[in-house]
Image 1 (tube, rainbow, N blue to C red):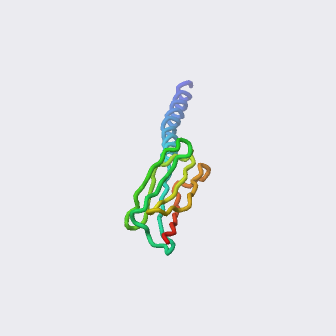
Image 2 (cartoon, rainbow, N blue to C red):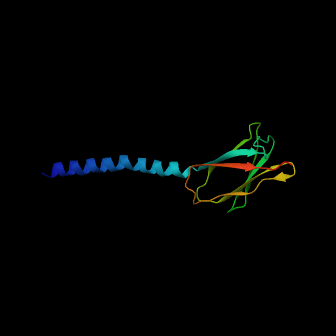
Image 3 (spheres, rainbow, N blue to C red):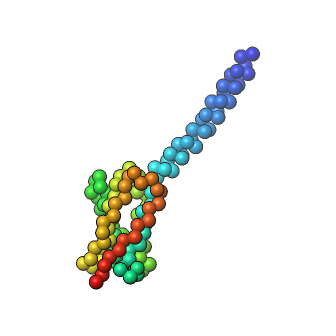
Length: 119
C-alpha cells in the first residue's frame, strides 16, 4: 500500500523538477534586456548619415554612442529594464531633443525617431 503513494510522490517531484527550469528560463528571457532602436532624420524626414546617437544610463551616467549609417537607423540592444535612459542625436553642431526611456515602460522593443533641424 505504501509503494503506490511513494511512486505518486516521486512522479510529482519529477514533474516539479522538469517544470522549474521552464519558469526560470522565462524569467531569464525577460531579464535579457530590451531593444532601443530608431532613426535620425532631418526636418524633411531624410536620414542623416554620420549623425551620432548618445544613450545615457541615468543611474551610472555612462554614455554609449552609435554612429548612424546611410539609412539613418540606430540600435542599442540588451538594455536593462530596471534603468531609465536618455537618448539624443547630434549632427555637426545641431542636436535633437532628448528623449527618455523609462524603466516603467514594459515594451521589449522601443522605437524612437530623433529629429534634427539642420537649417
